[in-house]
Length: 111
Image (cartoon, rainbow, N blue to C red; front, top):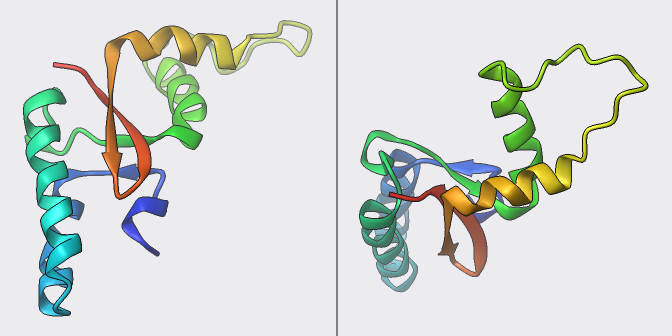
């Protein structure tokens, strides 16, 4: 699977992809990914420690799972209680910055 089709991408995965591309002779794409790494290193909290970038199409699901994992949103709500997941994710975007990875928008926790 191509790196820009993953739901989340870590720094380690990007570095590995750069190495793979260089071995295949695709220096242009490798250079672009190195620029992504530099940008994310400076703008995303803990990206150097593999804090992930989250693909735009996965962001809502990621946010809801994150809130359930930390206990802010119970995972066993009764069926009659509805949470506006899209609005919740949109509210959380305030804490994230956009990073373009080969034409695909990812979000990283802003630093």
